[in-house]
Length: 245
Image (cartoon, one colour):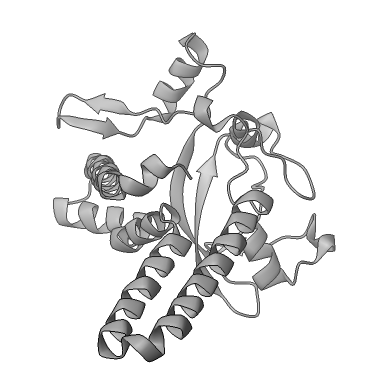
């Protein structure tokens, strides 16, 4: 994460809030077009997205430098102690604060270098494409499937385009059923991001067609926590939203 993102966290948080609001507006409009009342449409959109506040908090923490904030808190604590008993606490508190800060910085650096959480190839070349909704004035409206296909076929400004739609899923055929946050994506999604599954294969082009067998790719965390990191899971069926996939 760059220093610019750290010092502009408030700006990025407000930007994410606008994006989430735009998503809810677009989803609400689509639900109304399907015949729902405005209240039902808004409720369904919120249920599909999840908790916007929780999403913003998770992104906010991702854009923070935890070791720097910890070091600052330790430094303030040392100052308070010094005011009370400067002669006795100076050496001990400052040594402890600097020691914790240095160790936290080292571990955070190692985590950032060795354990990249989003190993997207050529991240600076990846962009998020939104539409402008003339009827509502929404500047960040999601694209429909026909629009996405037209953009992909006719656009010359991008190497390739992939589509995604955030969803929530109920995983039920496991020892501990749970609600999952995930996405429905076009078959070329991971190819566009330059990401390959750790085991198994990527989606096939024909699996984007309606009526095909539903195929899923598990996140590393879900694979570990709910399936015991079992490498033989390939080819097995799981139940999401009461459908076998």
